[in-house]
Every structure is written in structure tokens, then in C-alpha cells.
Length: 454
Image (tube, rainbow, N blue to C red):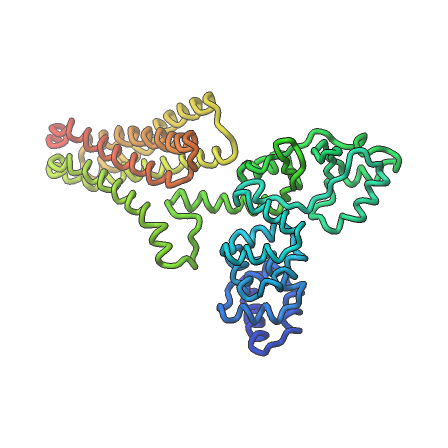
């Protein structure tokens, strides 16, 4: 992996090759780098430079660049090629990468390219395009290695010599019956070390972890991680082998899902990037900002309801933000733990209740600790013992609120089959602000004679 400074140096070299039209030098630069690093350089180039790069690269490097580029970048690269040049490139690409590309193409061009394909390839690609992009079917590759269970080891090895170069993974070999149903797997090592006359079904492992095409990509990632798989097969309802999902695709899914969760927790669309147009960014962000504005008014109205109390004890206006702010921080902590837990596992009712009561107890303890420190400081600054006591009690109350809502918001979203990361922080912060102000200012109003008499 090269660092940022080296990447910038290489970018200047690439730009010089483009300017001079030096195909030989550009291909040498590509060969000295990882394809994904070169793709990062190309992504930073100006639009008018992209066609020149594609013209100067040889067929092998052009295909490697296309495979390692982001979805958005692939579209930019594809625009520089006609349909026949694209088909030539597809001949050296895996079917799942081709599907990823065509899925992002405008409908018209996608049909043009499909119509030019050979009938067998067109059938495979069309079938794969029918699956949702974020499903197991949308991720799977048809370049797998499968052997009939009734073959001998010698026949199986001969078959691998024939079809092995066209597959993505050969360490794990899938075993099927005569109806193409998945019946097991066999390790390449076991195959090579077994007697040639032995049947494959006698050395296969029949306990196979598999998924159906409709399974969400997050569930696929969990299974691959849990069982430490190099690839996971995708089967039909009748358990017929349709394709495999390799670990490199699963890693991409994990990164993608993590990025989506981080953005959605802040109310930002996962589709947005630095290159998103101004109009799209407004469309993605403005609705959540308006929701946030509405919740801010709720907090403001709560404060306004205690306006007369604040006017009598001005110190309340300076202290109440401490109580609400600490509640917001605590709520975010709880919410983050829950979102992570829900992304890995389904939580049972017993686990939920145990975690819920733990968060309440945690709120009491953390609230008491923080409230004691804050209360003492407030007492020393304002010389008002009762104000310090109110801060102490309000801090405990708002920390409990933070634990309750930080726990319930993600769990409720998950139960209604919504993404628990979707703007959870907005709802949790609203609860801790509104109820934090209400608890603190409500206690102040109830004890107003004590505060004024101190």
C-alpha cells in the first residue's frame, strides 16, 4: 500500500503520460502499482482526462482498472467505450462485476449491451440483474467450482483442470447431485490427498452453510464472519446451487454497511459523497434538518414554559444546558452500543429486559457521580446549596432518561423492521433535551422558595 505522498507523485506521472500520450510509460506505472491504487488516481482526474487514460492503457490493464474502480467511477469509464469495446472487456471480467456495472447503466444502454451478448451470457446476466443490489443474489458470482457427487477423485481433478481457471475460488469445491442440488463441499487438499478411485461423496462435508438469493447482504456478512468462510453458496428454494459470494465481496459489504450506519445515525443519506451535486445534497439533508428543527422547538417550548422561574433565578439558564448536554452524551453512548449489537445479532426479549434494567441502573450511578461533581461546583460558584441539590437530582433523572431512550429508540426501530441506525441520535437527543429541561426546571419551580431564600 502506498501513502498519500507517493500517490500524489504517481498522479503527476500519470498526468504527464496523458499529456505526452505515452502509452508505454502509463502501462509501466500501472504494472508497478496495485490496480486499486491506480483506480484511486484515475478517480481524481478531470473528466476530459479519463478517455485518454482508457485509450493509452492496454486491454489487460483497462479491464483491471474497471474491476477495481468504484461504481460511480465505472460509469465514467464505461462512457469512454462503445458497446463492442465493453463486450471485449466483459470477456475477462467476473459475472458479478459485470452485473454491478450494468445495474448502474441507463436502461437504454443496458439493453443495447445485453442484446449484443452471447445467448448463454445474456441469460446469466439477466437472471442476476433481477435480484436486489443489496441481496445475496445481487452479490453472487456464477464463477464457482462444482463437481457431481458420483465422480471419482481422479475424474474430479481432471474436471478442475478444465474449469478451474474460470472460477473465483478453487480451495472450496461444491458438490452437487444429478439435479444440481447442493449436497456438500470438499477441500482441494482433501481431494488431492485421497485415492483416485474414491467417490467424491465419500470425502465431502455435508454440513454446508448456505443462503438463498433473497437474504439481505448484512445477514450474508454475519454468516461469513461467524463461520469464518472463504465463500458462501447461494441456493434456490429447492437447494439448487445458483452461485457463490466470496469473502472479498463480503468485506466490501461490511465497509459499506458500517459507512451507512455512521451516516444514518447523523441523519445523512448513504448515497451522499463530496461529489454529490448541490441539489442532491439539499434533498438528502434538508428533511432531517427540518425534523431536527421541529425537535429543537419542542425543547424551546419546554424552556419557555418555565420562563418566569428562570427570570427569578437567572443561574438556571446557565446550568440547564449542562444537564441536557450530559444526558445527550449518555444517550448517544447507549444508542451506539445498541446499534452495534443489533447489527451483529438479534436480541431476545430476555436479553433486552436485562440490558434495559442495566441501562437504568447505569443511569442512576453515572448520574449520581456526575451530578455530585456538578452540584458541588454549582454550589461553590453560586453559593446556593439547594441549587446544587437540584442539579444532582436532575442529572440522575436525565441520565435515566438517556439510558431508557438510548436503549428503546434503536430497539423499536429494529422491531418495526427499520434500520436502527437511521437518525437515532436525533430522537435520543430530543428526549434528553426536552425531558432534561423539564426535570431540572420543574424541580427548580417546586423548590423556588428555597432557591430564593438561600
